[in-house]
Image 1 (cartoon, rainbow, N blue to C red):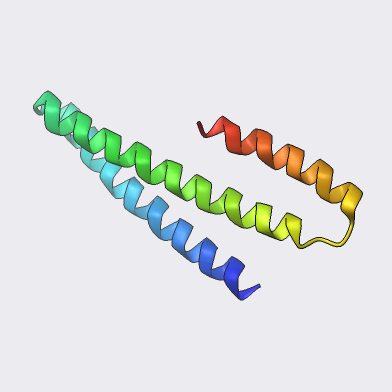
Image 2 (cartoon, rainbow, N blue to C red):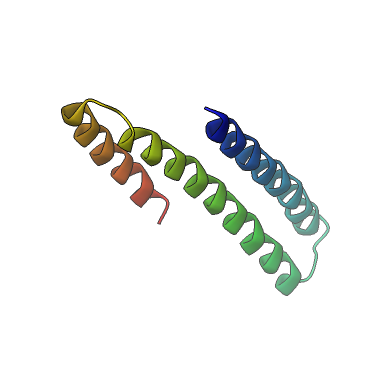
Length: 88
């Protein structure tokens, strides 16, 4: 469970950082900022969100693999795979 708390903390930190970056992008757009830096910041936000999502899914997959019930594990893995692919 400590690993789950650590993953959650790390994911939250990434999401909060992405929120700050997104606020910056919004400000840039509202102020009519230059295109290149705006798009660069937007790409950074997107990457931060993707990484947070991958961290959360990865943690769930590890937890699923550790479960004792093989039938339930297969169904959970199929569901998690679908969620994981939605991030691509």
